[in-house]
Image (cartoon, rainbow, N blue to C red; front, top):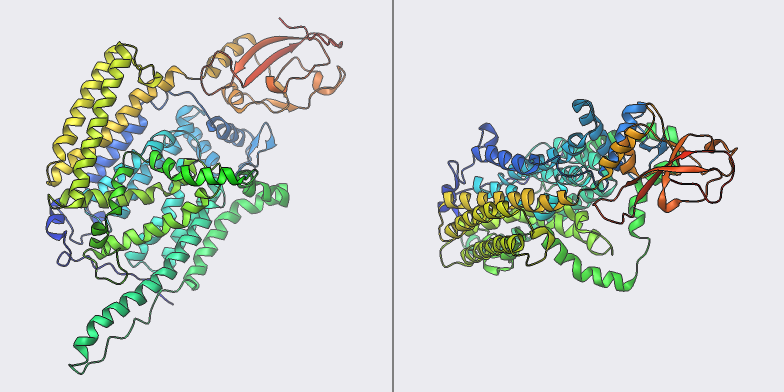
Length: 626
């Protein structure tokens, strides 16, 4: 049986950065297994990420798709059917149910499906993803580089937004990125083939059960392409080395080195074992689901979300998307994406062996990491870039593949010579970020005290604006001070300060803005429950909005729209329906309440649920309302 091996002989004797890499912590660049000891960087990472994401977890109202997956979870607990995702008793075939399973488990732990139960899986996934980036990066980078990469992922702009809400992006990102990074981690650490493939395919299967086929497609495409390219790279590298040795070997009467015979194979019994694990995990849910609903439902649950992206494709939309999407991704990963611009330097790429295939790299370990992550990004990016309408969050599962590249760049910038290009990138980036921080503080002070600029997110409570501005100036001073020093302690201070500032800004300035606009569905449903007779159940004429169903808690029976007063759906005391779907009712009724289901508090809400009470059984086209 073949073994997939790519030994990383991380010698501190052969590359430019070795002397300074030893300064990046007690271990430095030496090969000691970090998991044998508890590294303080990992503990600090957990503390920073947990503080950023658990602070004010419950202040933001339930929004977006959170209530949709929460209602699916509560129906699973209520009915005991964990196989078929349902809303109002009707199969909801948007995607597989793993995300709702996790919310249901959190609900069992909490005892209620509150905002903590809804968001806990996403926050834990974000924390695990940060640790995953740290652990993976430690196979190639110093502690400082791994720590920076992990902080970079946790504090990217879009991760700060989606990593704390009870939607599927955070959990899906963890399973997709883990399938790729754990596979490559095992590859370079020389795990046995069978464990490499089982780990990769197992995590890809969990990703598929979270959001659909994107996870296994990425895993198969990336690993297959990487192994094919790895074979070509090795042959090219051998040819280059052989050419260099020929001039020396021939005069000495020696034969040139023969190429390695045990190149990795893509298909083997170990590979089939991984495929079997993938199929087994999927089958544990898919077979019972198929027996309940049949093949059309199977097709719908895997393809419905993907099919919507191809509904309308126009040439103009494709062209616009090709131009704007890369910029959107750079914006979504700010401010850390600024450091990625350093890879445009030919000199830096040369230091890690990326300029010319087959050349001897100063740091072969980092080169292997960059090569694999480059394949991940190159394979996955077109799936979002070429489809008009794809949002930045669709590429979020690959953000953990960007983070180690940031860690590598920052590590090299900190340890570089004062006049080198990486060092200039480091100084300019920190200087620019410091100036932006100071500008943000001044903008908040001006908007809060003077009313200019009139940007809602900048307007804060006056006393808080003073405290925030003072804290921002402190963090800006730390970054400015760090930019001129190459000591690793200064690097830790600068990167930790930047990450804490980003988290603090989101948890205060941005969250204050969001909380001010919190939706009012919870308040209005609480008032409605006071008006309804005790124990009174509602039915809905047509599907009801999931925000209303989540806050009401009690099951809402789904009925067809009544056609006359003798129709069975009309023989109810209290009912509800979506205002956008309003039609004449064949009986007199009065309006009991209206509930806004919009994400934000608005004077004229768009998504409204009307709750009514039946009065008589005669047709009244005027629909008596109070």
